[in-house]
Length: 602
Image (cartoon, rainbow, N blue to C red; front, side, top):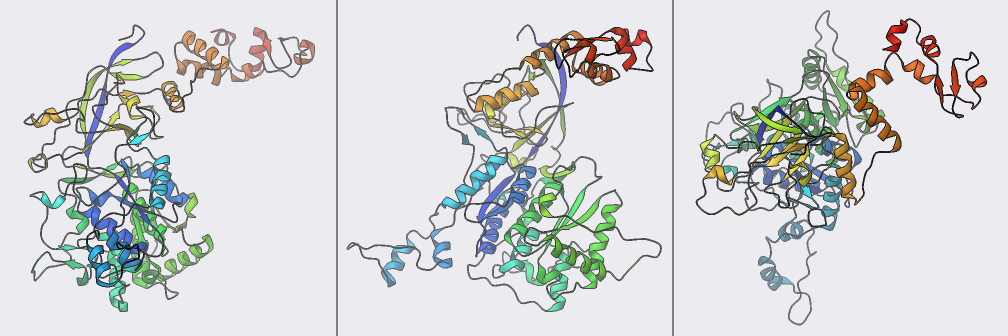
């Protein structure tokens, strides 16, 4: 330990959780299929209910969604490439197979050759460009050790891995019927159901928008708005085998099945929070509603065919939306309506229709206002957030010894305990990876903003035993050790024991500059400020002196003339230059009227 560092103690809280993931999909013509396919992959993974799906158009992601991804704070931003079979069904004939003579094959011979590669992934340059765009504004696990930047995981495949284990393999997972998007439901309604309930069977390539009668459409809309009086339509029941007598009110969703041994954890005070009702029929509207719900907890998406496609809103939907707004208003929260695909004027028309549809009024009580928020102006900096965490292990307190550097950087002098899982069912999953959020008491560190993983380790080792990143609640690291672990090693000894460091603002600036091979040094003014901070005993005392009651006197030392008689006509100061002067003690007392001279002198 350096002689200038001070030994102390602090308390940190740890939360064990599954990964947060952004899956990139094509937001073009077939976007509904791609999002349902992505959610089908997510719902097979542990914690997949918390995965976000973000579309792009030609490699470009909507700026609103980029801001949404930053707030969501993913551990991984991944592409999920289509297969040869996907593209052959959606774009027939796109794949050219040449025979021995160099000519394209056709007919049975082409089908035979095609069957050999039908499951192969087809990487997309546009997907990759969108992934890079999102990763650049987020803080996924990344490091430039060895020169070029590289991330922990950039691609999601169909095979289960340690980070994405198959939740069905867990013994305590629900293995019976679930509510899910039917494989033959496509279009915006299929995407809406997939977003709300999940996907339990591979979606069909040729799935069409379902044709529903008015009553079923109203029932579906109420269910999507979590109306307790609306059960899910029977069409949404998925059975793994033969089943009879299932009640849709009691049946879990495919999303819920992926939450085995997980709970929803809310962080921050539940006040001044905005819930969103997203309208519109675009892939971006779908993604916005999902990201908001995964980040802040209250987000709904209603396609126009369920809300106001015929120019009016049914009274039942209007009443339900008003009820949601009233429930939020009880805690000084609000409900707002927004869209990426609709203009602000169109949103106001939709809002007016929703408000007019609510014909049930409570005497003497006025319904809360339903605000219209244009999507670029959404309040992404609100405090209350929601996330999935491991049951009974979402808030563990640990006291650790730390050393505090002169610039305020705090470094753990001993590693944290191994992040051992207590669930026998989870422990039994071979190679299961989870993530550990670490929140420092009285933390003042810069959060997110993409920092090299190596900068967060106390000793900045040459070899990282695991990955770490700066996250929305502090810092996060992966549970497993990356170094060599022999077969037969006790499970707890395969886990990472990390000593982290919380960077001060000065250390953070230096670390970010080093990422561009630059060196950051204090300016001349900064050096003088540092000396004054040391003389006065700390930054708080410095602010009290230069931003407190003496502020008006200090401003009196800023002059506009190099002549003392002009700068200080009362003779209570001396001009040193055309911009800088010095007041006499009497001049200082004059400018801080109301204070005793003894107070000014002190």
